[in-house]
Image (cartoon, rainbow, N blue to C red; front, side):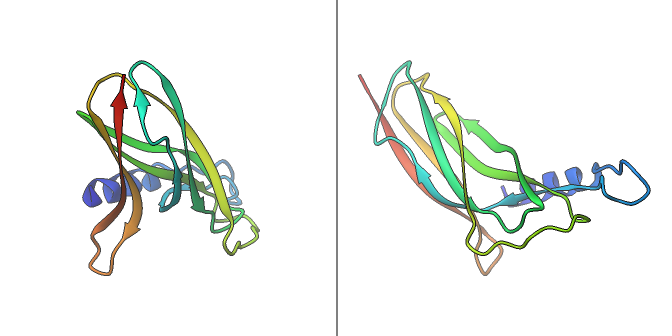
Length: 137
C-alpha cells in the first residue's frame, strides 16, 4: 500500500500543470491522514450510508480533491487526497479539522472491514484505523 500511495503521489505530482508563466497554475496532490471517522455500527444489505471522515488541513493551499478508495472483497481502504497550490499566498492552519464524506452502498453480506489511512509510523510503515461493520438483515 505504501509503495502504491507513493507511486500515485509521484505520478500525480509529475502530471501537475502550469497555466501561466507566473507559476500560479501549478499544483500537486497530497494524501493526508484521516483523524476521525463517523461510520454506522452496522449496515443493512441494499442500503446506502454516508461515511464522514475528518483530516487536518495544513493550509489554505490545500483543497479537498477526492478519496483514495480501493476494495478487495469486503475490505475497503480509504484515504483523503488534497490538491495543493504551492505558489499561492496561503494561510497556514493549526488544527484546522476538515470534514468530507462519501456514500457507501452495502452490496454483500458478512462484515465490511474499513481501513482508514492515518499516515506512517516511525519506521515508514502505513498505519490504519480499522473498523469492522457487520451487515444485518
